[in-house]
Image (cartoon, rainbow over all chains, first blue to last red; front, side, top):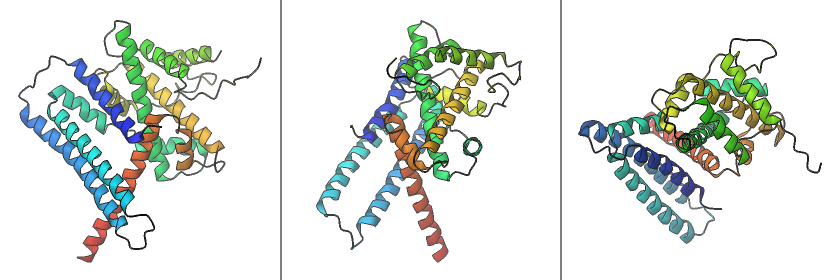
Length: 196
Length: 125
């Protein structure tokens, strides 16, 4: 199986790729201040997470009672560092070249999230017992990816049918039908009889 | 058969006039995620002002998705409870969701550790 981290990055780059296609002729408008600030914010966030990761890893590998061989994890760590740094640099270059509208959309993409309280209430109303915070975090994250998959598929359908955004219910329904046939939407209502 | 039921479900939500007991029940509930879903749709490529019907359909899809996942998670692992391991197990075949959950949980751990270290540093000084 391919490295999940790789797949995730490709997934998010796909989204940005779509945004670029949408505004092919939008040149670099002189909204320099906003772009610079926004890209600075995003780059800082990326760097901080990377820095936190660095500190954590150095902390754990410094323990003397570690049983792991010393050479292997260092090599992997360096390779992962290089891959991450390349990734971060590419993201910086990309985000710094966004137009104002693209920056808005990217900001919405990164910042939008489901409210944890509502998700927690929903899950607890189904289970009847309390759930841990990690479950809520995981479920909100998966739900957001789910929405992304549907919206992307619906935009494909919309383009294929020669319509323009905003998306209409018929696009969403066709997208759901397609995703169902690919088994990406769970459905436990239909009981599959094996031999009939 | 299943597809027919789904289509009926959608139409009931669009009507929304009936709050009847025999309806799917989705139209009755107050909209939980309208604002957030609008921002999300814009972020994923839709128009800046998506149609309200589309937002409603997506909300129902999300609620159904979460409900399905919760029921499945309750039936595996420790019965009657939803734990993170169960969710990760259910999502293992879908590369995007799996990677995202792993990232989120890892980042959460790092943030917790960073905050703890920061608090201890403050407490010391």
